[in-house]
Amino acid sequence: MSTAQRRNDHLAAIAAALATRRDAILQRWREAADADPELTTASALSRAQFHDHIPEVLEAFERRLRAQQRDEQEEAVEDELEGAVGHGLVRWQQGYQQRELMREWRHLHLILVDELENIARSRPEIAAAPWKIARRELARLASDGVCESATQYSRLQQMEAAGRLRDLEQALADLGRLQSERAEIWREAAHDLRGSLGVLHHVTTALRIKDAPEPIRPEAVAMMRRGVASMHALLDDLISLARLEAGHERRQIEAFDAAAALRELGATVQPLAEARQLALVAEGPAALSVQGDQVKIRRIAQNLLLNALKYTERGGVILTWEEAAGEGVPRWVLCVQDTGPGFDGTVVPPIALALKSATEEAHAVSERSDESSEPSPEAQPAPLLASQSAPPTGQPPGEGIGLAIVKRLCELLDATVELHTEHGKGSTFRVIFPRQYPSAG
Image (cartoon, rainbow, N blue to C red):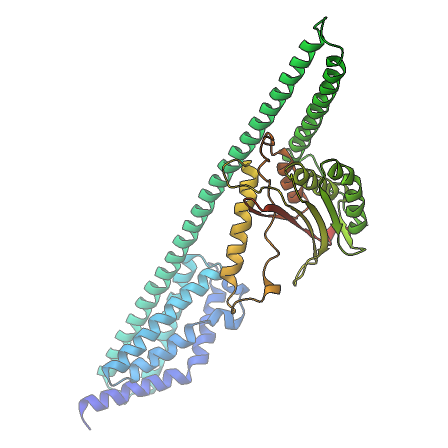
């Protein structure tokens, strides 16, 4: 037998002896970790969680000792490194500190040194040269294991830090956008108030004219009443928005029939639709038992209905309600669809643009996450949803406060609002409410 063959046989014998001791090695390693006061995380892990990739690392080390061909040796080394990388990943996920990871490898290295020494004492026939190779390979295993695990751990820490930085940058960008939206809403409100005050100023001027024709007075008085009512409604909306943004509003959850409440609202708004020569259709199941804040849900529906009627010249508005399809938390849907002009992005309150953008992003994420084939029509999202339509020709743009109130009320009620609009074809709001709330029993 050649010297090389005898060396390979001895290395294979060392590998076989280590293989028979693998469970004992892992047990000793766990006991050493439990006895180390600085390895506090290890005590919370099960045996399988603690060992994770290390059995594969030991098996690859044994194959490395047995390997006689270079490609076998390289494959075993790659498996060792892969196991070390996986170990670093798992330890990071388990909440280890990097110092704990290093100490864990130290314990494993010392235990393997002891095991080799014990095998050497029990197998005196093995020559010195194979032992030299085995000890060198063990040192390489420990060094590579520490380096690869630590490198993976550090890489994951950097990725986590980069993720936090991106989240912070996104939060700052969102805050800036919200501040811009809020400033625009209040600027438009101030503009409308100033316009109403201008109208009242002209009316009072007309009323002071002594020789004015008699028909002017009743017309001026009627105009003043309309102006005062408009200012009163706008101020009420501003107060409501301020209370919502200040967190002073609280939801009052109770069980009620959403179908009955929305049908009643539709009947209340019907005269306004008829006055504008528009159709108003309210349809849905005869009964829809839900939990929620009935007053605030009615405010959401009313704001959307009035908004739709305000910006629709021909056709009409459809108010619908239904259970939401799908699994998970039970939900129901309120939908307001108009045949108004929609908007083309040139004249639109920023809050409506934010709703439209959020809706498109949400559906884009949903489409990216769908790994199946092209969904059936039934699986597609309900026709996209809601918007502040651009005002008809000759009608001054709205202040957008109604939409802002809707958005804040939806946030308060854990509801989501979606927007779809198409220039010249109308707009649709779709509000998705929880059907039950945990605190409501």
